[in-house]
Image (cartoon, rainbow, N blue to C red; front, side, top):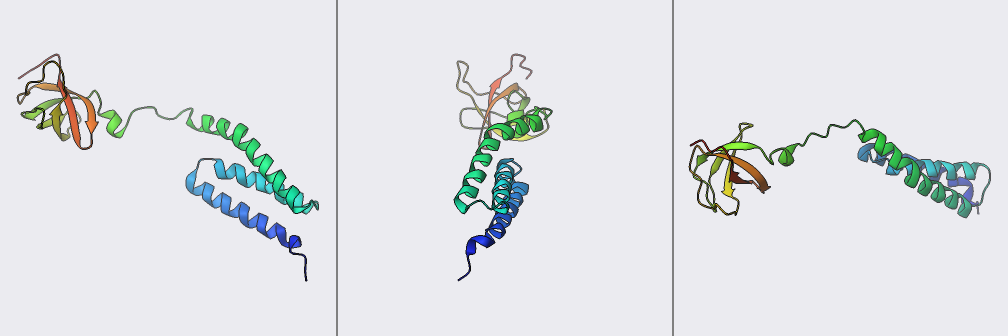
Length: 156
């Protein structure tokens, strides 16, 4: 019966290839570090190390890379990233104008970016309904509803 450990290099290459493919899909540098550690396991196989030592070498190097190099790479990649809020976060603080009366249960507002949203009044000391034409400010987004408060400069 042949010794199957002599074909262990095929398993290492397959595992490295799978890790690289997953890394290309995720772009988080996690599987890249595991692939590099597995490359060290393959190197240990090629110099004739026993199978358990190959796994130990791959695991130790993978953990070291995950704890040291990965955070550095992530910091470098996000250093010049645009920090401008987008999506729902960009709507918080945006001004708008009431289109139909906004109360505790609903209404419509047209925001400064041109979008029309269903809206409800945020609970506060002045919790009466807001009439059409009044300037409002978005304080939160709850699902598809903008939670608004009247702005300081009310213009009916």
